[in-house]
Amino acid sequence: MTTTNDQLFGRAKNSIPGGVNSPVRAYGSVGGTPRFLVSASGAYVTDAEGREYVDLVASWGPAILGHAHHGTVEAVQQAAARGLSFGASTPGETELAELVKQRVSVDGDGPIEKLRMVSTGTEATMTAIRLARGYTGRDLLVKFAGHYHGHSDSLLAEAGSGVATLALPGSAGITAETAAQTLVLPYNDLDAVRRAFDEHSERIAGVIVEAAAANMGVLAPERGFNRALARIVQSHGALLIVDEVLTGFRVGSAGWWGLEASKVVPDGAGWKPDLVTFGKVIGGGMPLAALGGRREVMDHLAPLGPVYQAGTLSGNPLAVAAGIATLRAATPDVYESLNRTASVISAATSEALAAEGVAHTVQRAGNLFSFAFTEQAPRNYDDVRAQETWRYAPFFHSMLDAGVTLPPSVFEAWFVTAAHDDRAVGRVLDALPAAAKAAARATA
Ligand SMILES: *Cc1c(COP(=O)(O)O)cnc(C)c1O
Image (cartoon, rainbow, N blue to C red; front, side):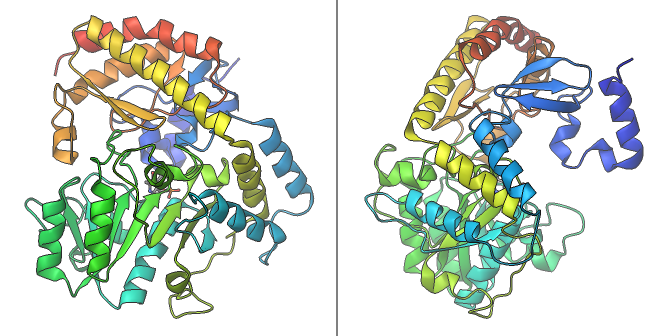
């Protein structure tokens, strides 16, 4: 007898808060029982009931080559046989750092002179803001509403109303003092940034921004936004921290910055972040993340400088092996295939929704995409939240019933992999008409 997802979820809830180790997995916004996965291969995942699904979550990005990619698995197995963790330096760490520096550059010029490895994106952004504060000797941090940078205290602050309002805590357990040191501004609003600097110029240590927002659904920056932001921030002696935890090595070899610097994205060339954070793809599915940037700033980290940061499992040899294998295999051909697959699936989804008269916009940033149930393309978090979010749950469940796992929230990007071949994509396309009908029938 197989154990059902229902049984597994029931049991998990007795021993794990909400039955999950990361909240979105609980299906809170779509309802129903989460699928408990037991294996994955290529474009597919298999649940505990033995059902196979075409996967459009891809571990939230890392599985860029497809699940259980042969070269990556082999690299990890070989590393494991040599020892799981040493708590000492390994040659692989330097190899990965060099690989990142070389990849995140355009015409030999890039923002990464040095790189420090950590285990999660949360650690990378947390360290980046500590470093910005330690380097500048200032206290305030600016972030944008709807941008996600992990769950450290300073970065969970929510949007207050108006410009540069001192934010209120966005989670219980964060002190008002901590939240008050984070200013939350509307995305794509350069005037709001200028006003924040007019008011607090001497106090702002840094501005953190997703290279292209993809944690409120996908929301690419308006043309030239990142470059103009860099000018403002850097002219005030603050640091620009560009969070590429999601976009780095996913939208292209050199991340979103690379798409702008190489003019694939128009009107974005000619700027550089001071610090960049990576996660997700850089570890190829293993816990690995990193922050990198200008030598002069990075050298403020211990042991060279006064900003402390450390990690027992940082640069773990298995994670480093997975990262190196994944980055080496993520060739320009892979990115071309991801772009093609993203175009096919996003166009077909839009067509299916249009055929049922469902108002929506296609949100796209490179091979990342999502859909907002609204007539007008959103430009910030308020716009995104104003959509008909309730259309997503029935859409999601119709796709799930047809054997396609989508992200269990309308505020997440869809992820394709290089293993999504015609058969896998065909299964997604076949499922769309019924799902679009379910979205059309939905009521608030
Ligand atoms: C996922 C994500 C993080 C957090 O990374 P974790 O590894 O989950 O801690 C930070 N920033 C962005 C943009 C992300 O998408």
